[in-house]
Length: 517
Image 1 (cartoon, helix red, strand yellow):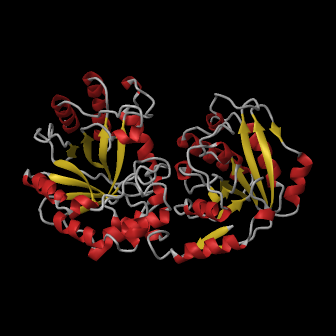
Image 2: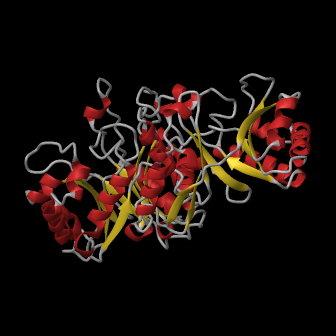
Image 3: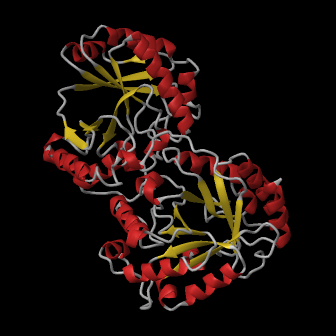
């Protein structure tokens, strides 16, 4: 087990036995003699699993827990635990965050998991006060979405080589056990609880070295005075205060079909290193400033004047290769009185390789982001710093720290899957927003939706945008929005036509009017 006191993380070798209890909707199943033996000889860890009818079921097993369907089994278990003289750690429905169908509590909502965890925890602690509740994700990207709050959690666990992860295909597998351990412990950095590291059929005593834990504890301690693991730079559960007096409305509109509409306050500009070096960026930037618009700048630091994509861009940023270009960029940004919203290395958490900074080590990403935002004292005073995940699973793994972020931006596009061609199957703005905003709940910063769009017939777009306007109005912590008025990059979509997010001036004006009234 690893625990943290102040800036120091240390390793504690626990001498506890691990058993399991299966709660079916009809009975409590366990080997009574084995369980009593387990609890009689010292501290123990029990993994509790809840099943409906003993099989995977379309029914929501988590809702069944907090609606009392398992109360008899919980009381039986609590009575047994109460007889123990030792601490009993109870891990409830583990691996809940993994997108697999190994357990019936997977692919359920984070809210339902949290309600079920807290329900069973409250009952067990009342029945058996020595119960120590363990929140037990595997340590997969997106695990913190299922954090049930500090109220009842005494410790957390991660699992090395879990069966569920064998079934999941969303993220590339990591073969090295030390690398897996580092990833999983990094994902626990927002959780101020001791971490129990569990093995599996893949990772057992014979292929695990205890010094790996010591190495990781020293690694975390070494970064505790930086933003990576400093408690100053993240606040768990601190509510975001309302951010706006008036919504900042912008557009990415290279064909300039929307920029003159009443209510447009900002224009969005995507650029790379080469454009800054060749002065192309400055020309575009000044044109926007001369229109008295604020400017959203997304800097993609991957192509300089050589025209060659830098596949090691994070390493080269940390080595200072692009410092002169960044300094030139800052000089341009400070040449206007307009407010500039600066996004750097966006959508870093998506497990693809569209950008060279995607699918990279989160710690190195954080260090590179901070290097940029703090270079020579940071960008000019008219610049607001934006950290820009897409809002997908695992976003918070890349959080760079409160001191280098003014706003968090996310992207909301209606198309949930590139294989869907029917516009009517696009997700509602409100549904996507709810999911992505929930992922940011550890981070006390207002939101800037710097990219959003919908494709399809105008009538459908208007309906989707009406839902967007209502959602934004209901969430005053959303400071600004920017519509992406163009088709997507065709290279990313392969043989399929790239979606065209363009809307008519009439539709955009209708959205502006709806969101402002």
